[in-house]
Length: 272
Ligand SMILES: [Zn+2]
Ligand SMILES: [Zn+2]
Image 1 (cartoon, rainbow, N blue to C red):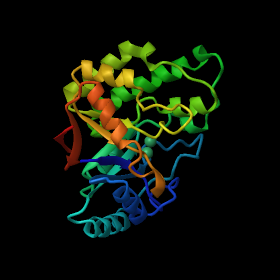
Image 2 (cartoon, rainbow, N blue to C red):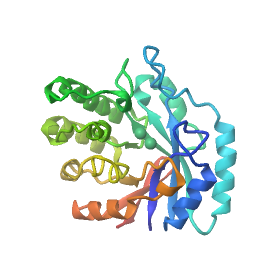
Image 3 (cartoon, protein in one colour):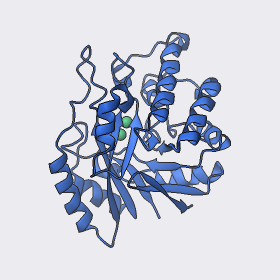
């Protein structure tokens, strides 16, 4: 069993380069037995001050039709499910609820790509002195606590997202300096049945690590966390399925017994 539960495709994700069929083909060739297509839905993260956030997503009918043909094409060979990566759905809870309730979706990743009234971390220039940026990381983790409590996602996406872009600028920090906040976050996760994802997109990037970093994943386990999905966050077919095996190895090393699939927003535990 190899499941890539974080994949983007064009035209639904503006930053993707490959179609749904190409992404599925890439994942299948890489040996995936299960995939979940999770396109960006940034409807709740719109920021008038910085209009470079992806536009609101509304093309559900086209998405469903294309998904159904990909699912049918791989029937009996690879399990293809449809999800979404919702950007900060708790910023506009009623809209976040509308997205989460879409009947097409088996699975929703909740990700904070931008703080309120701020640009996506992708666009930021990071200071050499981390103390200048520290308050933003604290605010970021506080947003995840609110997101986990909101009931508007199934798992929390890439906790430590900015570390990927900081590393490209030669900057970095150890997320464990925020251990108290992380423990508070993981308590909410446990109480609300919210999982986290191991995002492998940093492995072949400057940071050369998983997101969240392994010590954070170990802390989640220590706090009673059991629900984990693994996703490549791939945006082109060549990257589909990338790092999933390595992610399972990390989960085992951290003491996890299961990885999760999702149907109807309910986790299905599969032994590692
Ligand atoms: Zn993301
Ligand atoms: Zn993504």
